[in-house]
Image (cartoon, rainbow, N blue to C red):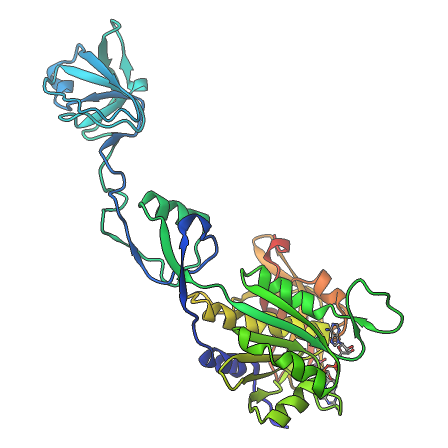
Length: 407
Ligand SMILES: Nc1nc2c(c(=O)[nH]1)N[C@H]1C(S)=C(S)[C@@H](COP(=O)(O)OP(=O)(O)OC[C@H]3O[C@@H](n4cnc5c(N)ncnc54)[C@H](O)[C@@H]3O)O[C@H]1N2
Ligand code: MOO
């Protein structure tokens, strides 16, 4: 069987998914949402010339002309927006950080560089540069200037800037609604009594991975391995932006996803990928264009495929410019053995140590060993044609799924 390679499969998925539309939301609620279009600042930032220090607002020429001191003619504090005027260079205003600069002043001298020979006289004793300690109107951003948020996932500091620029409602890509379901007669719901069966853990690994990426997820439950049961769930698929199922996708007589798609005449864009874990992973567009991701049943396989293929696709659909997978190189801190000619994505634990990354391979790499995900934090890729021992000390490319545990 000829199988597509993982990187071509990913490109094929990305070229088949479309961005969703937008909604207006308050900028205060926009954390981790993606900007739909650039916006313009409504104000100058700062919106008025003001002082960067607690000190005295002077005309710079006073330094040379009146070395013995300047008369303090008033105090200006932050929030005092009256019009003050410094007409006489022998005078000065006491001024607080953030307070509006009086008309005519061109320099602020911080307290540390002054003395008061008399209570209402300020004598400058330190070195002062012309124009010092003034925050100029519009020096951060000018009214009407463009703020580039199209395709940017908004972080706390982005929201701070948008608020400072007077924005209240912005257009963001609307949230994705994704359906997750499991298939398999052996599966039981979490919380039920287990005799001999398997808890549906896949759906919750997938659901939580998506939730942590700010995607809304509906869990559609478990379909039995029969066409009628699956078809009932199939009817609700049109309500979602993407569908993700696990299991029932290889060649068994009871592989319900394979069988229903055959019956409905839905073509796979690809079926099976030259990889381990996750060989049976398949991708299709339903008749209404909804992307359908068919994951293998093995827990490691389904998690890997969600992380490596589905997340970038969903990020692209959410308009995120930064949708591609990221990798780092790490030095192997243990041997790995590869027997077949598929691409392998082996579970490793990446650690940042002595200013470089090391990757400790997990002892077993079978696709049903959930512990490997628990103890690991990354997938190390080994090229398809490479077989035999991959030795300690070699550099491997790693895709990290849990950055928090690396450092
Ligand atoms: N004749 C062949 N058989 C198999 C092949 C093959 O190429 N030829 N490929 C093997 C590989 S590789 C994989 S991976 C599995 C994937 O099969 P399916 O996707 O059809 O999944 P199932 O067989 O139904 O289940 C596999 C395994 O995973 C457990 N499982 C299923 N769903 C869940 C869930 N929601 N939560 C937790 N665990 C789940 C299930 O009980 C099985 O143990 O096929 C091989 N066979
Ligand atoms: O490709 Mo399967 O996911 O190895 O077990």
